[in-house]
Length: 152
Image (cartoon, rainbow, N blue to C red; front, side, top):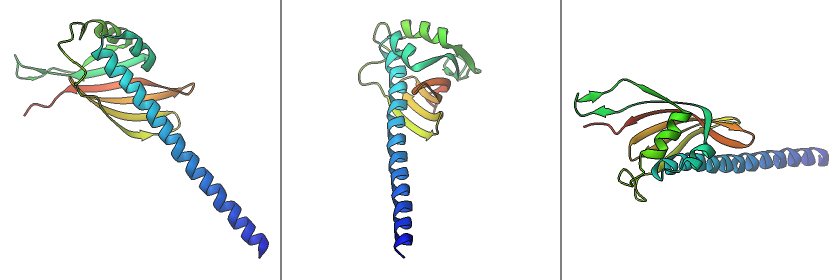
C-alpha cells in the first residue's frame, strides 16, 4: 500500500510540475511573441528600422490589400519582402502624421506551439495576421497577411 501511495504521489507531482512548466513556458513565449509584434508595429509607427530588424525575419513575405477610394474597392493582394518593409518603415510615418502614441497596438496571440505561433495585430492602418517562428529562442515574424480596416 505504501508503495502504491508513493507511486501515485510521484505521478501527481510529475503532472503538477509539467502543468506548471507548460503554463510558465506558454506565458513566457506569449510575452516574447507580443514583444516581437510590438517591435514591428512601433518600428513602423516611429520610423525605427532597428525594431524591424529585431522582430522580422529576413525571409518575410507580407501580402495585403487596401481600400482604394478612387475605384471604391479593394486592390488585389500586393506583396512585400523584408527589404521593402525596411524601406517603408523609414518613410511611412517620418513626419508623425500617420500614427502617434495613441494609435492602436492591440495584439492577440491565437496559438503557440514549440516553434510556431499565430497572432493578430490591430493597428492604425488595419489588421495584420502573423505567422511567427521560434529560432534560437527568439520569435520572428515570418509571414503577414493584412488589410486596411473594413469599409461599412
